[in-house]
Image 1 (tube, rainbow, N blue to C red):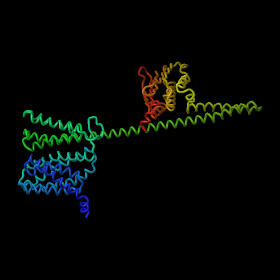
Image 2: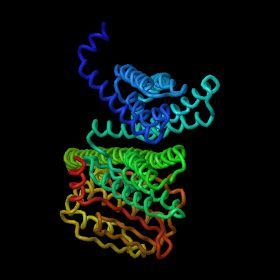
Image 3: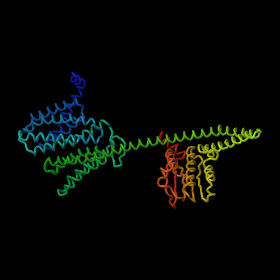
Image 4: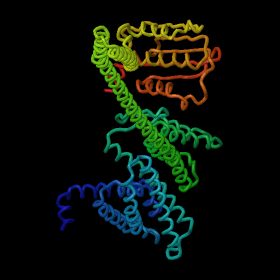
Length: 533
């Protein structure tokens, strides 16, 4: 009942498909009969490519319709034409294709990549041709055949399938997708509509090959065959598997035409073998380039995802640094406003107690309280400096760095410390300014404590970003500096979080250390954030 309802709903489509298949199959058989007068070999040649393509691409309900149509056509040919005993295999060969397509369809629908689909089609054609040859070998004695005839049938089936099955798949893909993905050595991914340049190139090569076949002398015949292979190589290299398929079909027409005029091939089998070879060359190269393109596309997508992920992590890390600095600034303000005022009040009260009290013990206690408050005040100021350098807010980065050099007292220790600062105003945001100050402070502390240097140079320059460079002529860094201390490691993590670069190595001119820190300017940060969003 379901089959009847399906036929009533799609009756016109079924009838149209039936007649189109019959007309196409008969036309291809007629063309094949010009190359081979044998009824069976002609039916196994070009009609095989049409049949296999439709069994793969058409919906399953149409398969039985195509099987019935081929059986009717074969029966009519056997009835109308004189035939040999082996021609009765025309009735058997459609079943070989039908049942093979049933097993093949399970793999076909699981494959999504173009190069895999094309490779599967070629494999289907080869297996089908081998099964046809095996069937004839098994019937050699009953039908009084020869191994040579079985070989001819195998070559005919393989040649027709290799030429037309990928070609019909190409037409199906183009009508279904309406776009081509051009393939080139640069592997540029850019989906565009089908361009006429592919057909123009095929026509140019076709004309060159035809002229070469018709004009070259017999002794130069191998050169003519080489020219015929050039379109396959070029089209596959330029347009991938699509170009290889198109060139294979056009070259087959060229070879057939050349044989009619020049007799380039001694027999049909030699012609079909060369047609199969040139088609497989183009298809193989096209499959290889298509696979390379797919891998390049996946790699490009993976790189893009990694770049997006890295950008996202850098923005998140920068936000974390911003939050950290905001918390430091808030805590420093609270310490300065609340604890600082309370400590000052305790000091005042202790001094009043010393002045007003007559008892010596009370004065001693008040003095001790005042001394402790002074220590707390000193510790609080040191903590405030670690949390948020107040001098940075008061003087700005440039003057704060100069003040930091003076506080290090390099001159008193006979250390020649030079500082060079490029204009900074309006180029760095608050987070970058604080980071540069902390990095300079950490690096100068390391020089002062560990390097034993007599010359130190601190330079701030503007290039692709804002760059801090410190060089000294000290003893250099130990080989295990990454695991030995936390100072440079902390600098490395902070610079990476801000999307900058850190380079630590030996001083090129003399012994010592060179540290280069590159951070983004305010404009670069805005541009990077705009591009990401």
